[in-house]
Length: 275
Image (cartoon, rainbow, N blue to C red; front, side):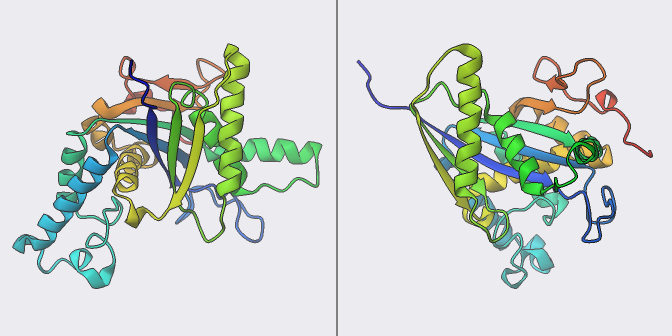
């Protein structure tokens, strides 16, 4: 009998931001440097060490390639690609190599998406009921953690969940609380009880190759939502298990669930307000 405990490894990062207002209370959604959407994504990686080693080997080979000798982002002093992969900063040639490597590994990517214009409407309605309420971006992040992990914490004996660090504050306990709430809601809905151990590890993306992998999936998804470019997410769609668009309620109040059987395409997206 095999009594070895199963440990599942999740790696979590975000795309976009939870900012709705500037310091003067003005709405800045979609303005320069502020996204229209906030996306939280997780990669379920079967062999994280193998993926991290593969990405490290790829980065070393690219740095040594004469083709990139004079590329600023490939120089150590720039602290960009020479330090870690980051899709926003990497060259198109580098992105293609990284995406191709990701397709070779046992990875499942899942994400939840919020349209910040809809979040703004919620905030305004809540302020009408409670004048003392003040929106904080962390509440949106924690809400998406609960939605993303509701169905992901009930099959294994233990979970190691590595979150990309956000800012200087330590939010480990807040993340643990959000994960516990996600698990409790699943148990309440389905009548089960899970005692699996949950380990939360906040880490800098530059230190963890698997977080860099999540960044790439998120970048591909963000390009679809923010810029209406679908070729990147289509290229890696075989690794995508779920994208839950919470605010596209045209057909269902719970939003839209995109899966392998119902792929996310450019034609599926509603237009942004003002476009």
